[in-house]
Image 1: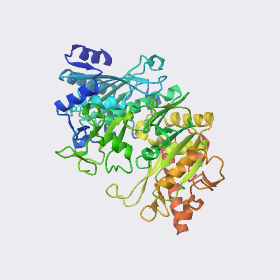
Image 2: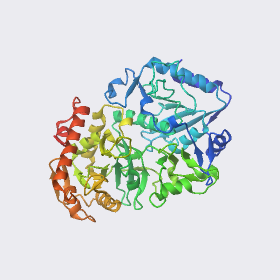
Image 3: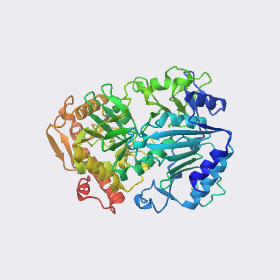
Image 4: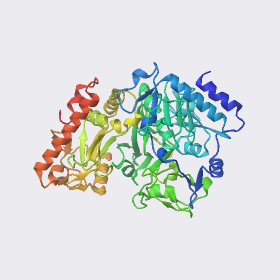
Length: 547
């Protein structure tokens, strides 16, 4: 019996299967089962065990099969192989667990707003809360799904968030934790069989990121570049992409009142332009402020009937009167809210657009040496795309007293399983084909490193982003930075010329030079370790700082 046949058998014999449940019914079921509670505003609120308040990279696995193994970069730490026979055991166990559940929900959704490559998805779960998350984050199946290159090749996701893997049965087959116990959680991708299994992870984001990873594996073979980015569109129809790791300002800067938002996290760049993958947003709640993030705040805390509210709040403190405390981090700093995109005011309802005129790589350089903005040619863009640089700040983790450089390739390393050139070469091809301008924007420090200098003012960064997406930076004069191999503008509308090179803002120029050389050396060391054995274009190698 195949994987699909075994699942279909469970669904056939089970007495309570609800196909494509409505939002009101899921809200009612989640509350009745005590999976979730309602806030005073009408949002659904849920909590998980401490070990399941975020992604678990150590338990995220890829089934290693002949059909796909040559496409996957097994040297990357994020790509952990799972033996096919172990996956078969886990799948069989999951089917046995499904058969015992009081009720099963089958949600037929899709991933991708462009019907030409929308991926049909069938999610099966016994959890009303996780089914509701699927309605928030995954899209309705388009009426013209037959146009999709994935038509007839649906991806199946089985999500068992509250059931734990039998750790004794799988001793020696799954991760052994620091305390010596065997892990009871797995998040598994089987690309060859178009399957995903979330078993023991109640973090809703495990479902979202599994499907993002699936798209990131499937699309490059079709000439479509998947990107971990936000996207928006101006009144002139020109689109822009913003890529960046957590803390760089990706969500904040893409929420521009003069530009319609396509989405804040996952997009594809295909033959006809860009398209959002998702139906909703999955935003962090910790320390959320209404004045800084009014759109997310209003989507989360607007008053509405529970059947119409749309927000699903995860792992955030709620008091007995139903009020939420976004500053309480005792359970986790990774409290989240998911809601449909139409909860926001300035969105493009059909989240597709033409080829981007502008791509912006965001970095928060705590060393204070990168310029506020620099222009990148194709090779430089491919290099910075491969590196995905930002800084981890002192104080964020025990023992970190100085900023640490963080490199997450393609600004989303855990979700990009293929060999690196599959993504980098596609970016280069699209930059060339569509004459897209690429900029590096530093949202980090100026006037000194973290602890001495100050964070770039948001108004300065907004002026830079506006100049980039409006084309005002296309024709200004540039000077090459010989150490980092990037082109720094000598002028930028709305920005004082003196701050465009960070060295000018440091009182101690020799300290700046030492810090800059140190960062360039870090780039070179990481590049050699990660890509020294890869067959990369010589132009990309030459663009690496420190080379």
